[in-house]
Length: 240
Image 1 (tube, one colour):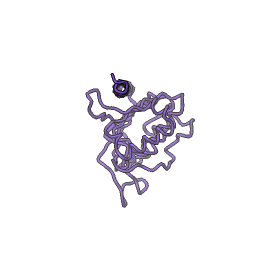
Image 2 (tube, helix red, strand yellow):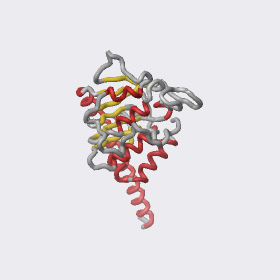
Image 3 (spheres, one colour):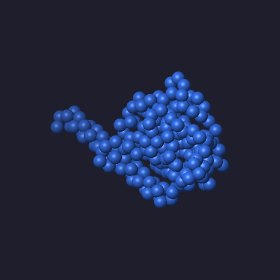
Image 4 (spheres, one colour):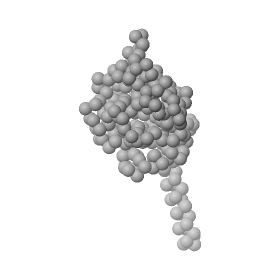
């Protein structure tokens, strides 16, 4: 994975302002982050497709996620964005927000992601273990979903991983370019269609529960191995 995105906040990140919510969200609010700063007159009212490297996807994600105030269901493959992670951890401390965050087991072992997650656990292990789970798909393959549903109103899905190159690093305001600029060929959709929101949220919950069951089974197996090992050691010590 590429290096983490900086923790520096921008005006799109309103996590500290509880009056900023998604209750009246409209997709036109995000047109400011497109290259053109506007949508076509024929653009859909409940779905928009953004392009990494052309549109500022990092700001789009911050704008939506920092306004979640009721619930957040999410699965993310590549998780290496410090500011987005900070938003999630602050929401995890708010008991009025229901959260289910699912991360991929293979990615969680990467250098940058492991450092980020270790920091989260050290900050508040109880909250992290309540809302976050690291696992695989139901068939024990990678958990490759990259999306979320916030407040049951706004959804996001696409090929975008949460990393500098995955989201696109804008080193010149409002446009790509400059020394060190990185941008993978990724897309990010934001949608408000109620049927899609409902179906995707249900899928995200199912994926979280699958990963949670895997984690519970792994913990039980480890405990069983330790108990068996301790029993054998005790028997050997007593000469049985």
